[in-house]
Image 1 (cartoon, rainbow, N blue to C red):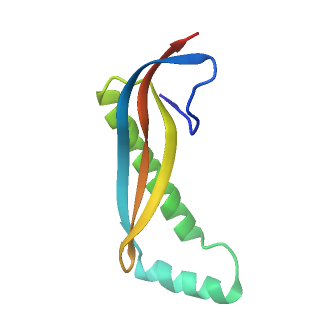
Image 2: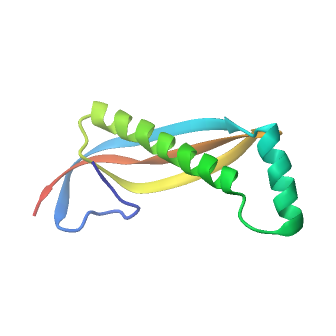
Length: 106
């Protein structure tokens, strides 16, 4: 599956547009991670646990979006975007979305 943030795929032409595809995940913070994050806030530095959690959330959202695109018969997704929103204190949604298309070589 080709995934790009642009409207086109270099060397390919879009022959069919299949529409919006999306994938999301909702993650909640962990008390232990919050304590470590608060400590990091005092001494400075990267909060590695949160970095890993967000990377996993992005990958899961992407995987779900790709699965939806494949069900529709797409071989590429263009105009990929990510969005986040807080649902409640300590929980947030990460959404990946784009346009499923069929591309062919030029």
